[in-house]
Length: 441
Image (cartoon, rainbow, N blue to C red; front, side):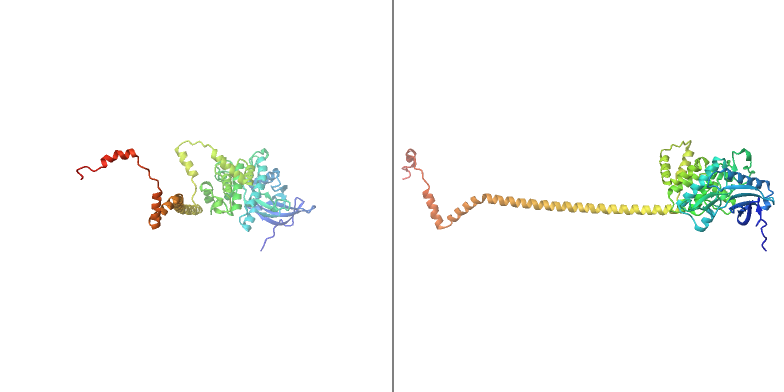
């Protein structure tokens, strides 16, 4: 048998009629109500009846109302009124939002596109920036407290982001509510899956840097479809948040760029000093992700880091050593295969080039030999043509000598040759010696 809710139909503060319950949490429940005279829909949050007598819960409830009212941003849920109902239950009147939380969107759609994640982070950062300027730290930022309210005039995605539930917010500078943000020793306030190491271990006071960690963890969950550190128990989650290797988004979702890996590593650095200094800087880096990542890489090339000892050097080398993973091994194997293929192709091209050079040299040698032979033949023919008149004359003489006509012709040439008459003086001189002596007779 269902017990009727005693709040249904009642009028709160003489202005708001309770219509139906639209949500519930650990500290209270939210109801859809209607303004009696204006007809305007509002959302009213009531503390659970069994907790309404707790002084601690009432302080947190009062903190939520004052913190939300102090934040001047359209990306923080607006607080219209607050008070105590006739039955003793404290309440907060807020603007009524239609849409769904980021947690619901992830359950229905799975991981979101990176450009949509960027839009959500940028709008949440605007609310947190105003909260931090007012001295307020949310401390419980998670997908369930990020509401995507339908708004046709909002972003291109059709929603406007609203940050909800400042119930455990820490008010740092407001003297009027001094101490309401303090917690008892050992008490963990917030959702461990999205809390920073210092918030989980109380190793340092919570600060805007804690909200930066939580927003980075929410962005990781929205982009990857899972929380950064999973665990079945709080102790397991705390151990992983504080000591386990930081997850790399692109190893879980290869479509994500390496620049998002660097952004997440800085947003959720365990050392608070290494995180973004302001949530606005964090959002601006994500909006200009590629440009920011190039600047970070260039800065790291020229950054000089003091190293005190060999232990520091070994630790630095260990930190800089790349993490091996199955994806990295596969990529390494692929690169090695490509390198071997390129080497084999280069060797083949070299051998073919050498063979082509040898063929070209042999062809050149044959061509040179042919040219030299042709030149020798032409020279020989030229010499024969030059000597042909003498050869022809000798040939005619030899022919004439071999024939009777030739003999006669030869004789005629001989007869025609003039003979010199001997010199009488020489003849006389020779004659005495030419005569035969007595002995010869």
